[in-house]
Image (tube, rainbow, N blue to C red; front, top):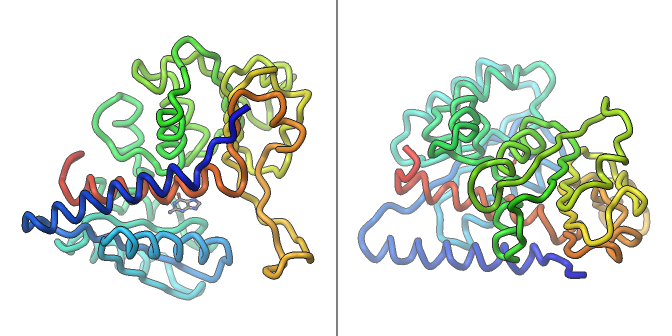
Length: 292
Ligand code: GUN
């Protein structure tokens, strides 16, 4: 059993990006510039955005953080997006989710210029990704693909079961794993909260991607011997023994599932760190106009 080291791989990806940016700077090229819009005071979002801004600094990208309080209107968010769309120095930007309930997420995402949508959330990027055209691939699925690649995990002909149908992880993950390329060429099953006999299907998985957001939902009896298990879950649960008052839990009951696996990602230290690295990669692509 191999524990996939997201910390190591994300550090490698970031080091490679840093070297690319240094080369680009030396050749008089543009320094990639990422902006992030953060609305409200969701604690997890604060942590994620801080990590994205810190990664920009480590790699040598420019970054801009635009913070607004939770009373900000949808119109105000749309105005900020318009300004970023038109700002030639900004290569890409993200709107951190979730947004306060009074703001329509779809309207916000559709206002982002697809060329600057480094999260890959815009319908144009999702549609292009589904067709296999050049597109920004959303950061978490992209990070998972990179882990599979860097561990040379075989995927062709395998049964990949994705648990969870979210727009930003489950759905794109299922599309990516069936593509006619590596990593891909899988037979894919997408299962969700309404699936009957869910564990009968997860037990057939050669590659199991858990992305439903329910801490420790996947137990040993749901996993086939020798499976590759990718845990995308990242839920904060109260833990009074921790200084922060909470612990991060994945969707997989790691201690009992790990001994059955060929490969498994831990939480923390697995997919989460790759999400940030993948966003940085998309930002470099946007600065180079490699997708559009
Ligand atoms: N919220 C949870 N994950 C993400 C992500 O990848 N991007 C954005 N913008 N918000 C998120």
